[in-house]
Length: 110
Image (cartoon, rainbow, N blue to C red):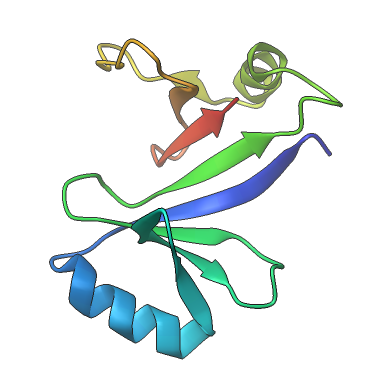
């Protein structure tokens, strides 16, 4: 499989309080370079990204040794997903925002 669950972006009201709780609940540690990211202490598993402004969604990472972001967008579109129209991307965006057939939002990270 060329996609993996790289991160769960979790909309939270207070990143500091949330980090304290989720770190203890899941045995995750803050990333030294960005304390908004929590990662498993054992090194195995998806990260959690605590965010006060973004909506809760999944970040799906593309294994570029197997596929490309464009190929995954095409594959997921064939499964019923679609790109989100009118999304404003930063100039250096490495992600594509999509919606599953049920309307839930997720990102393809390349």
